[in-house]
Length: 409
Image (cartoon, rainbow, N blue to C red; front, side, top):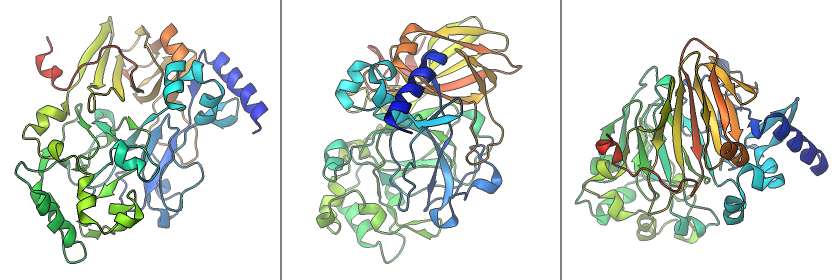
């Protein structure tokens, strides 16, 4: 599609949708993981990109961030908009109308939609790993990756193999302990989980994970608002009998540091990893933000990362035969997780099964202008309509802080 055509289609789509764009499913495989098979993809399609690429265990939402996979497709991780049969990248739409879609302040600061969210759905646990902070990621031309978790009940009908997540390190752990783990990489299980603690995952709750913090996500399907980056370093070498290559530890580190163990562990945020109050510092439970007759809007991701408001998320529930009008101070990416209804002029339908490449009616992007003007959400079905939406940086003047759920009145 030419630039001129994109401009016309974007303008038409925004006008027809009153500032809301329809998005198509964005599937991402991971060669080193096993699909959990709860993200509604057809059973025949989990290896639609080829067995050598690995199974599809992620669906990305409202993403302008590329997945950093070996052998990736050119658009892997990027969300497409669809209007009257035509598809175009959300990234291109934002570049065409940045002030309308994400607001002038965010565009001037970041020149892009700097966040994304996804469903992460794995059969078992994944390696104890961390995501680099902004300074460390910049060493290889990338950005840091703080992230957050929420475990939607609608996508967790079963626990799969290991509904526990190891997070951080036990207080008293020394850096030399981690070095010894890394030194054993080629010899045996490096034992890094012996230095950590596992937390039982609970549906309807979540966690805030700062960069540099080790975590080994368990097997609940997870909704993950996060910064728009795909950097990571695996610190565990064997998971459920599967070997993790050293290359996945150092892939986002300078090449001349790939054997420098002191440098590698310097990318960990040590104080946050050994925090004796780790759960109190990072655990999230929903907090009511707004409510009315037949509907409630809850915070599910909130708080700051190193003092910065980088992303947040809410869960809107509308009961059958009710509707509400929502006004937000900024753009958001929306995914419907239960029920049927309408958002503005667009229909919402939660799919029970999706073929790879099929278009659905469960995902939209709510522009900055539409959010500030307000939009209606109506439940037209016989069960609750539930949608998750996530926001970018510095959208809210006030945000709950981690731990506020414990004092909610």
